Length: 488
Image (cartoon, rainbow, N blue to C red; front, side, top):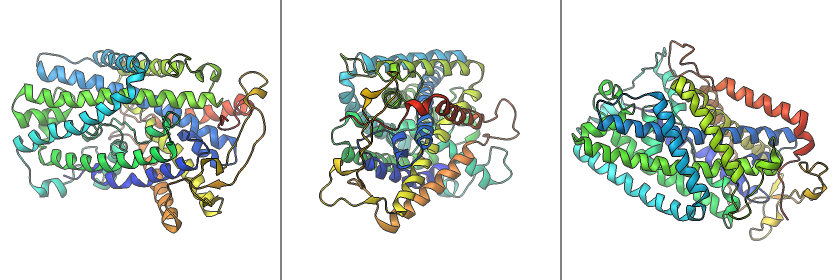
């Protein structure tokens, strides 16, 4: 049985490569919205910022929701008399968010060590699930895995069903989320989650970020792409009866696959617990990244109430207000789930259109600068100070929230990583084409017939964010937002 993720493993490398190239171009190692500084219009700098900030806020809520409902599925697996309720999942989401807040605030000094521990659990967890699954589960034949296509969305053709289903797996192979969370969940759900560019949003807290961030992103893609594809193939071979696993009361068919493989509730629960643990760890990282994204854009006066959102707590040196805002947004979004889980999933699917929209703008502007020769090679070894730098005197603000000063412009120079010549142009073009396709299909409903309950409302949410960012810029932002601030 073919699945969109088999193609996804190869396609996501082109936008990934564009992000890595532009990361090296930033004057100081900055965040995703800063990539649009290659453009000349301020609105091109602000609009991707809003899309990215909102997209990452929704990613955090989706990660916590996934963990909460995974815990709910574990309860249903071990207690057949349990009746899942949507409000149970919402309360469990709050519990996961609470754990993430504690780690990101009270235990913030331990976050780097915790990330190292997560990597170990991530790799060991892969084998802890893969080995018993492959050894104990009944296996299908290769023909059923690679030649059988299943269209359960009611679409007129299998190809169209494939493209609509592909958007549900867009984030699975972007790399930095734990493998099992990123792979097993999208196999059976319309729920999305992301992570590869998370390292960019932490770049101001990383030494020699222009080198280490691209290295981290490439390593993530290679490691998780390889392990993810291996796990995908293993799961498809051990799939069994699709109708039976889809009707599981856990809400997550992979738990039913584990149960069929081990013939033991305890064994299946132990394997599923690994996924839950990695999911909670991923939510901790998502909260850290999304709060830094919000803080960084607020510091550059790109958000309402930037004066407060851009503050750093003096003692712990963490963006406490931005963290609290992210938590509040996640809690408010989770209330939608009480009314309709479908509406919640479709609204937070802005993560696809929002993040990929910001990537697309950055990739397009990078391509323009690449073609018109605006980016030159460094004359000597890599020197960050030789790149185009915009220095703004923050002390010249008239209202305490604006920015002023003059620009010092130096030639924009390639950083330590790039794809040279025609191959680089082809990579940018391929990435842009891929992102346009993904954004287009991200607005489609997951199945037919389309009803108000299963309608995909992400196009409405995306349009609102774009319109709000433009109106905010025209009314207030153009007086306060002058592009990324550079501390000198």
